[in-house]
Image 1 (tube, rainbow, N blue to C red):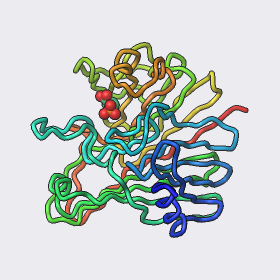
Image 2 (cartoon, protein in one colour):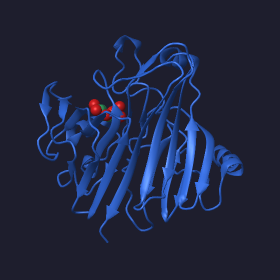
Image 3 (cartoon, rainbow, N blue to C red):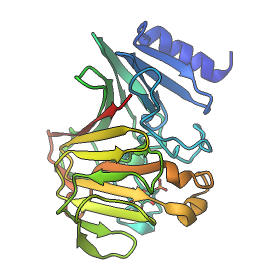
Length: 311
Ligand code: BG6
């Protein structure tokens, strides 16, 4: 057996649960956990604890977009699914350190802590062992874990929760995001509701503005909305579906689509692939919404994604 199959088999023996949690070697090149519950399924890569796929019901389309050009097991994060950005969002504030954008855990190998099952529900919790250098940046005694839960709710749903624990002696300041790539019929046809009246920073111009009405897309868009708490909806009439995002302990929302030219520069989005997704990110972004975790405190940022599909 190849190394990935051996690793998957060992995890299966220790954590596999019939009909609920299975470990497999992914065609993308790494090991993934497949959760099944209530007719839905989700796929979570050990690299980055990255959810790569969520199909709410058998026969439905994936709610998450994942680039066919990405592979696991490389130094670059998979472009798609739900990358975990921690303990900073965007570029590190100190450019001189040469640290990667969006933190260091989205490409790290995570470990399975536990799996859980209940009627109509399955879950997995992962954690990451920070290297000494990473621990020095994050602060001694700071740790992070990530839990993915499929169902059960009235409508198909996926819950993800990013937990920061500070068992150190100094306060820890972080920014973070669940950088979700939602699959849509076409970027020109989808709209996002729930941010009307919110102030945003346009990262492309450096200007601030207030959102009026729904967000629609006709060009590259890269915005940080501050002080957001209402549920958001991605309305996709062509697919006949509405995705709803309820975030918790998240005060910012990032909305991003690279459009054509930036997608070409990124190199891991197929030509015209920018049309197929929009990122709506549950986040805490500085300077306004950074988080301070005091010694002995636990901070949990979470979101529940649900999906209604007209049949
Ligand atoms: C978004 C940022 O969250 O992520 C954008 O707002 C950035 O500025 C995008 O370009 C993608 O980042 P990356 O590191 O995955 O290419």
